[in-house]
Image 1 (cartoon, helix red, strand yellow):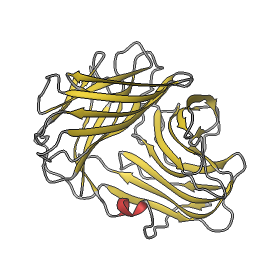
Image 2: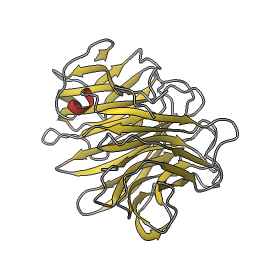
Image 3: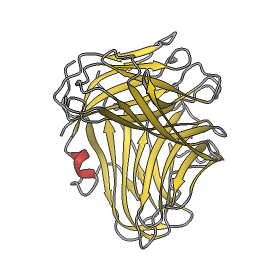
Image 4: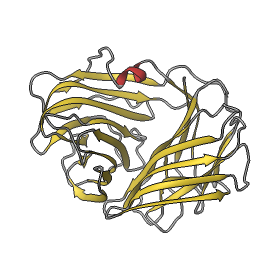
Length: 188
Length: 166
């Protein structure tokens, strides 16, 4: 069955998508030379949740690597995270607390073939609420045709402040050219 | 930061009727940042899902998966493959496999293309997948099909474009 032009109404899962429940806030495409951090400032407080979508590669010698997430410039030991990680041959689970940033996997690293960029999306839930700590979760992965991994992650920022800025920091050198990070607001 | 109205744009949709083994979206505009394919089929027979891009049937695809069935978690991969396999527990005639497929930065002409998805089949298990198409070409055609000889008999497959802020 080939489709070239049809549009139709919404059902099931698609309903929320058809109602345009997500709006773009900001996006950055990393240029020549790369950057160590990407920061989204002055985030509107008018959404229910936030989502960041990315493709990225950094200088790690491994085929996969990660980036840290900090809110409102807080680099205290106020973060915790867990992962469920598929290596391509086994599964591992890990968690840790009292960290100086949340963790998101994954980017690809320089250990992967040129052209391979990891990707994923992270949902930052109820980010403007001032009564509870902030939870964010992600699905990310990088496949490099024989290596790579896939991650389901959750992180916690132990702070009740609303989130007005987000800083993403590569955990191995710079985010390389052509990495892209896009921030969206999700309506409640 | 000023928000812009409207991110998800329905590019194309297909209602499945009869016995269908594949749905192909053609002439996809390059004006979005990511593509989302929502697969809500009713399987007529065991229907694992796979994708190919731009009619490339070469061994230029791979994937890594993570899956759990209520008892055991496992991970594996397919390398040098002719498609990106997107399900471990796909649909069956008694239990559907619902999927949301994210095709990241599909229109750039510099990087290989990374695909993420999750598939949930309530009767059998759940899985997450990351796939790679080793091509720097912009994706203009997406073929979503039943791998391994299965088919769909009802439901919808929809293609959306997500636009990033300019």
